[in-house]
Amino acid sequence: MTIDESKPQRSADEEPLYCVRCGLCLSVCPGYRQTLNETDSPRARVALVRAVKEGLLDAPDDQYSAAFFRCLLCGSCSFVCPSGVAVDRILEMTRGELAHLGLLPEALASLDERIAQYRNISAENNEGRLIWADNLPTPPTGLGKERAEVAYFVGCVGSFFPRSYSIPQSLVQIFDRAGVDYALLGGAEWCCGYPLAINGEVEKARDLIAHNVEAVKAMGARKVVLTCPSCFHFWKHAYPAALGVDELGLEVQHASEFLAYLLETGQVKLRQVNETVTYHDPCDLGRKGGVFEAPRRVLQAIPGLRLVEMAENRGGSHCCGGGGNLESFAPEMSQAVARARIHQAADVGAAILVSACQQCERTLSNAARAERLRMRVKDITELVLEAME
Image (cartoon, rainbow, N blue to C red; front, side, top):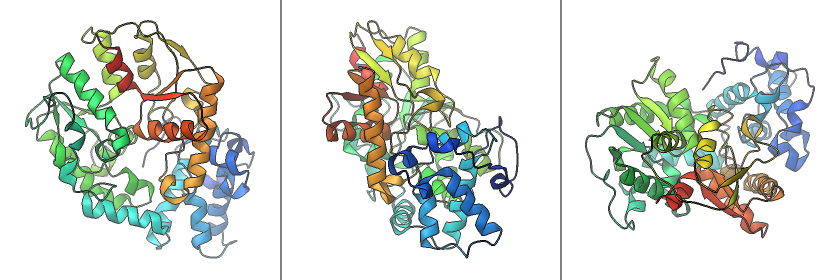
């Protein structure tokens, strides 16, 4: 789906040949670190691909398939590989081949069917995407607006998961107080297509992609802002290629980048907040999307806030456990990864764990409760709204 320009540009078929089996990827793979099972390691997955291509293994079966879908697609392995092997490219290629062979696990095939039928991951009436706006003190000014400079793309999780409603609620209140000219797409917003793509079914995502770009451009928007890092990553790095263009003709920004702009231009004023926080880099926003500093600039702009870094941060950040559609396929591994991350936040003495992703907030909040930690988990939009004068 994406190509890291800093890595050697080899074909997907060539990639497995460059793995020297050093095992460095095992030290950073969040799934392997929980199971210590070699079949859950990036090295093993690369070896499996090579073995099939060289005829050393029989045709792929369900057991082979499971090895590739028990993965968060967090990109840690590619980030540390000394041979420059784009392991994530291999995984994406292999998932596509498995889906073509009819070896997509049932839970993930069901997810794809829901998206195809309902245009969202939740099998809800897609016209209900703005239900989160119903209990705001005043209706968002972007509600029902047909033309605007900024289109806010909320994403499926923020639209349909009640635990995440507070994220779009917070952002639109910030926009309204800052006087941002924005519009909400409502039912015209469809799933971004990323869940389909990481299930190996990129072709099924093309109609969604074309529809979303057309819907935003129909508003006359110059910029699309997204709170979901997966939506952001897919819009920015995969949408142009999927549509066969170099540029979308739109500026694509994550909400943390836009918030940093609003703060640095004085459009948002903040009060004193005397708390110690740590920041969790979402995989799709940071390691895969390259946005590390904007969220930190936002946190540093809040008077009185003390930011402490976890041992694994920025490009080396530990996954929250919510990526790769793993929750749908192997929830026990997803939960174990989240518990490991929440303890890293506790180790640095933070009272609040801040992220910039609704998936991260949800998985890490659940982990804090499961581990009985006195740790609050908040999205960066929620923290900014609380700090506004």
